Image (cartoon, one colour):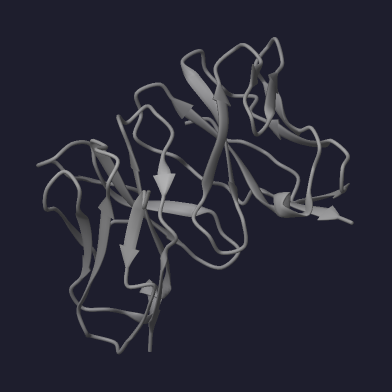
Length: 112
Length: 110
């Protein structure tokens, strides 16, 4: 019963490198989300996908792109990583947008 | 979405009830109150949510005042594993967004 799986768990990048964070859910959920969490802060929504084939910007989308590859998978891409993007990234999903979200365990990303 | 105000930290003795308050004085009629918690550096975990009536599940109880301007999350018998940051979130029905504040750091002491 995996729930929401994020890969990798840890990653170190150099400024300017590109990276794709992967997220997959096995609960047949329609909606998926990407958040970032900075030290001492709550989570902030980067992008979300209300259903397969749709994506929308959240609170802090600049510097990121997303792909809803299929119903199970929602990836987050950093095209040119910047130190300000050092953060913990969480993926979440729910059956529909008005229902509780289930979160993965996060990807810890450091950009030097 | 309405803003919420929570105390930054609270302590509770193991085995006692933990009562976590949340003020949401600007809540509107179609906004739900959600509670999540985050243990150490794990992903947030859903606890409970409600609109008007009090709610109870296997994890906790949620008490919402009659005017809906505040609520209390109750963990009836806190354990050390309940030490976490607890987030109170107000969310519109049908909205995709969860807006996380800084939450309350609950420490359960032996």
